[in-house]
Length: 531
Image (tube, rainbow, N blue to C red; front, top):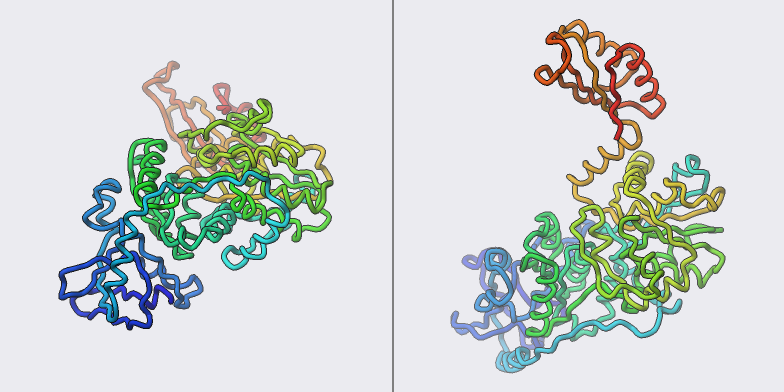
């Protein structure tokens, strides 16, 4: 029986009567408890976003999320976290039952006794091609197929570039593949009880969305310093988000405690067989989309799970295809692990806003051994290369990606892969979740690196005529003035001089050099401010 038919969610308790359910529809439900309201049974649960019950195509569907287990009741809210965050998420609905409610209540009373800490264990063996094929067949019911298109950047870098646009997933990340297959691989008992995790990365967003889609109760514990945007996003996807502690370690400890007390399944991003198989469907998909493939470039670092999962089907189908991993030069997690011969002992957590997604992920022995066996090359790139890759993707492809998504192209931009000249190459754009403020900051810095945003200073006579002549030069050179400021008090020359600082935007490096040459010939005090 569908849960949407079992419960009535009313907007107003005062003007609508409870829905009657016949004894034929009656089944075991752990959410019931006894109540004093006219002899009716009362069901407790968090608020439900009624708009979420509509499909994205506008049709009404059976997508209302299952309410969390009966452990979440108003009497026990203080056990889960800070009340100020929970009060917004908890409401009460009434349902009248006809039949044999005593049987239901007696069964429900046994649920509180079930307090076992459940953690999904990693598979001891590596993922087989058959596992990924099975995942690919099943995953098409819940995760969309993303395009892999020829890029306009091909001529610029001398190779046939194809972009696998995984950032187009609903939550903006390739991790949806692994999460969906992982959740559907859980037993019905585990799905009924719900899952709990402690993270604020793309993995948690994917779990929040797909667990709700699959009617699995989901709880996310995050530190108090988590971005309000990320908290809001996870709540809109349907998860119950609880802020606890000042660090990731505090949140993880609290999540494990709640899992132990309430019988939830504690989830963390690890190299379990279902998760790797789900991620591997991306490799199988791009192999089918691009014929005569020579190489695939994937992000590495904390994303070793994706690297290993995607490489498995590619190497199985054609061992001659080169698989390359790319990671930041300042955080070479995979490079260091290969050097030591073992994966990192624990995942590293960093507050670096640009690389936080990469460093908040971790990989275990399975992913490491698969990477060691399947990957042909690992290269590192500088921050400047990543910023330029983000800019190039926006300019040429209108693709908005984060640092994780731009890593593959960054290796091409930096000239780290000259052996791929003239080859057919797929670059995986695996993520597009970057905050607006950080994106603006990255683009400004990239424009400076690309010599499209320039800054210089010079001294003029303190009169309007000299300033007007300077503006005439800008107009003649077709440069756009973004900012111009004048300084008088701190000028060390004569009292009738003014220091003018200008920020301008030009088309390219050639125009910037031409303007620099013109100004240096005209003004002896001209100073070009290099980054």
